[in-house]
Image 1: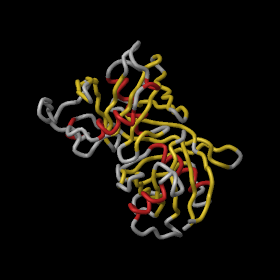
Image 2: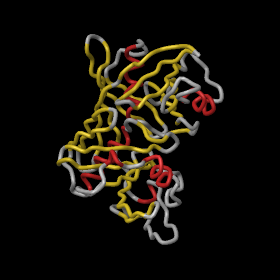
Image 3: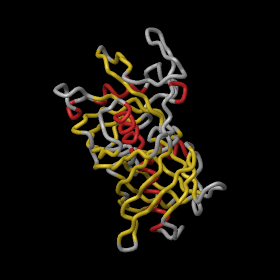
Image 4: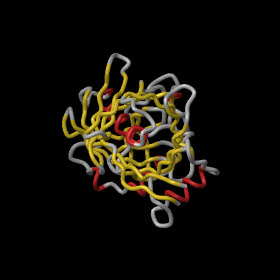
Length: 286
């Protein structure tokens, strides 16, 4: 099987062209190939195939083999893949995902894709849309937003704001002067958040520091994968949560461990746009 390793801000995936390749037992294949010591190494596997409703279909698997709904960095790299490989000559694409059809705008340099903007759609904010449910000690109205809800994790209380970008996110804004994002032990905190009973489908969690109205610094724990260098949907969720709580402007640079993403909100709904780099790392056969 031929593959291409790609990354957006260090959020790396293994890509397979399913117009030419057939991947059986994709979940198990994703788990095996994503292993950084015994496989290719990556945050998951992304299969590129034909779609009846868009230009391409993106099927994404997390590093633990579970099926994912959407990945902002992953879909940007898909845009670069299909253009640079000659599967399309369009610089505006529609890509079908489990979270709906997404629109991509490709920006070129010397005939290759350098950055990709993605219309990430309108965020879902109601508790039932995340989804998040009431559990003993926590009362949740399914028809209301979860905004700065106190949540006890491992003996500490965190204020969480929940956003769905096609996948569930819990955003925690760190209080200025308190522990910084770099000092957090995500390998302890992350699993406790991810598997909290309030989130029936598990959750991604972002720990964000607001540096100013136009700049967020963030670390992310992704369900099914662990800490990643970046998360496109997570960056969007942090930007939406920052706007909702009055912490940030409608256009914000989200600085992740692997690089920076530009996220901006359009309209009253609003629609969320994200732009960032897409890079081919290497190609091979396994």
